Image (cartoon, rainbow, N blue to C red; front, side, top):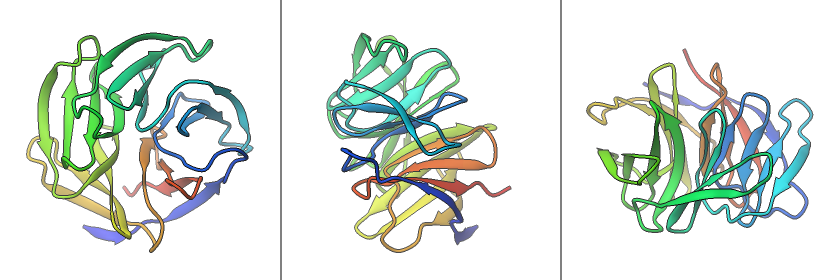
Amino acid sequence: MKQSAKILREYGPFPGTDQVAGVTFDGRNVWFASGERLNALDPASGTVLRSLDIAAHAGTAFDGQYLFQIAEDRIQKVDPETGRVLSTIPAPGGGGDSGLAWAEGTLWVGQHQGRKIRQIDPQTGAILRTIESKRMVTGVTWVDGELWHGTWEQDQSDVRRIDPATGNVLTILDMPAGTGVSGLESDGGDQFFCGGGKSGKVRVVARPR
């Protein structure tokens, strides 16, 4: 099923931020990666409440207690209260990694050029399974047992739901021309938070039922 994405709201661009990469949601705040900072955004007011000074180059995830953040060829486990990096594991793409999600007690890592999603052990980085994609993968998220990921190639970007067993595409939400998805996270309900790359924006996209 293919349809146009419905953008419900835009946040940003934010002062001192020229890109938005990974995004995650801790139940209250949307965290977004912006290169050298990880920022907590209040989705009600659109205000950035605080920032952590850590390398934050791509995907971001939250396990209910800690943040996980891709920094080049590694994944950092971060205390959201202090910004302290508690541990690191190697990223499966060796620097070609994009999206990041937490589900089933594991991390799910998008690989942009590799056109893959990897499920990995959050303690060791060991690859547990691989899902192939027909498009360059950006953000990754799980919601209600559904696996969704962003794609972005040249000027075309979308959000798609895939069958986690086969990789078959079930739903495609086409983003408007010139609008890309660099990171993806569900709010647990009817909305996705989407990183907007060099636009410096975070967008809210409706999740179809």
